Image (cartoon, rainbow, N blue to C red; front, side, top):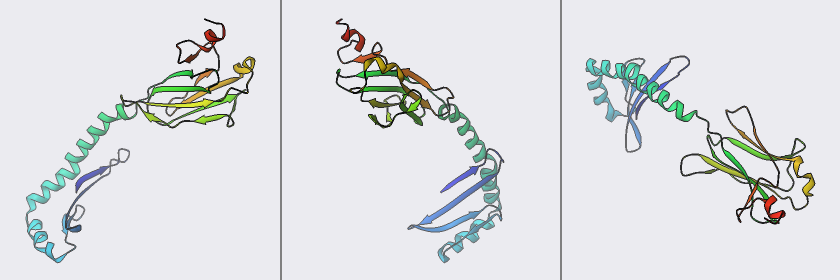
Length: 198
């Protein structure tokens, strides 16, 4: 096991090189003392041989204090834009049939640290709500749904309900009002078009 730890705030670097045999430690580099630790008597000859080789120790020290941290910093910085990115989702209201719950569905968001819930007059609802889990999409983004059973709500009160989507790293919430005009159905019509006979 060979590698290094780099603290990007303090700049502190710790290198490590451990060899094992049959599931046991065999020989371990102590970079601070520039020596090798031999936890078993079988490793003592290797320890003595490697400690005599000053060029090997200089090469190991250079690797762990210069080369490894440079590569680690390079790859962390290259990955940072990808790992720290945020992608805002497309949020839709869906309903399979007039008697089905209304599903607030968000897809295409990143990262997977997100919350979605229904509110009424600004208060989060817990009754008549079914939270789905966050699921991966084929492109590396994520999706989730939260269903609201609207069967006991009069249609004229729907405008009091909101679906709220919150994404980690994004200050502004994505809010969509419960409105029959924007609900998509399996039949390709909005709930409003269905109710008006279109």
